Amino acid sequence: MSHRLPPHDDPAAPRLAALARAVVDTEEHVAAGGWDAPARVFALVRTRAALEADPDLADLLDEDTVRAAAHDAELLTVVEQEDLPGGELEDLLAQLAWPHTVDGVALSVERIMLPPAAQEEAIALPDAHQRLAFLAEHPDRQDIRMVVGVLRSGEAWCALRSHSHDSPSDVYQGADLVPGLIEALASTLD
Image 1 (cartoon, one colour):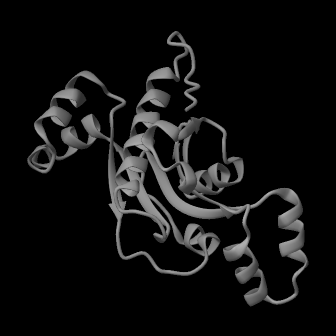
Image 2 (image 1 turned 90 degrees about the vertical axis):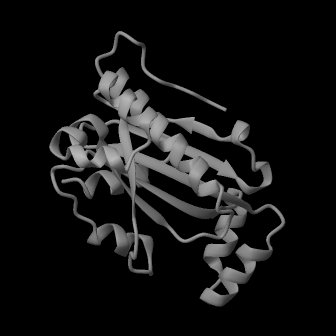
């Protein structure tokens, strides 16, 4: 497992630490549901600011979260977005727009990873059904779950879990593990 948070004297450290906690908690929540899940999208909201705007929100949160928010202005509450349209991930992301009260976004998505030579072989197959069969049956395939979170202020955090190493202690984490997905998520906050 990798943790690459900025030094504590970095002004972004508290925000990035809060984002990392939210992403890891989200990854654990998604993992509890098992594999072969559709993409899931989550709004990230600063808990203290949300409680100040709507004190009744405290009734929906556990007491520990409400207490933690009193001491940590960066603490994030994760709100799953339900009833999203199916289809391609790119199309889903293109449809997302967030109000200013949403401080960030997280996404959980599963992908099949292959070694470079196998990727080239799959791309060369002319038929989409052949490609899917090739991917599903390839002995070197790795099913990976990626949970990526991005804040409006620019911080990003990723948590990646392999189906073959399906344990919380084997989740790989870092700020820049999936740059294309980070960029795509950040664009939904513009």
